[in-house]
Length: 281
Image (cartoon, rainbow, N blue to C red; front, side, top):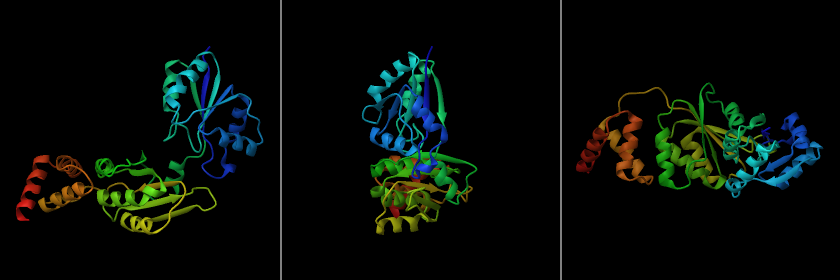
């Protein structure tokens, strides 16, 4: 008989948010795969539970190598519990590879629902929650980040991003350039923790704040989706958007393609607008 893979949500801040089933799973699992074994031990102590099975590390650095080992254990009938540092495994955390491997071995895959920074930030942001999409971490390199944000510029659903403190200001500035400085957004910091903070406002204001403040902690950014399609942009506006894309690190051809896609116009029209603008200059 094949075993069971259990994906368990863990607190994103307040340990009192641990799901009640988590303690039972920690006590009964044959193997507990943890992103950080020290944090796992601390969590178990707080919950007053003794981890009953073998504890192994499962993090970004060894995920690819350890997945086959755990999949073999599932094939032999083991109950494997996967926990990450905070939130739900596989959501910008290790886990996806193991889920795929478990499905391939025809093992049962289930979950212990728990806290989620994505849903918590979305709920407190004050932005529309009826439709949303999770975009993970923006790319670190400026050009790649600009390209990714340009792809999302016309997205009508609310957007949710993770970001690190030292890249927050640059990412918010890039979002303001791609989405417009007046696009409503919320920066959610240290959710459920002692110094929880939710700062709401236009992207341009949030970018300025992040550039001046010493922002720390775990950060989730929520951005309103694009408004209904407005008037078709004229040639000058198309050329301006291409120039912004180039300034953000895109090659001209890439910038033209992204502007054309976001504006819903042919690339040739955008190219002609750029040529005309450069002729005037």
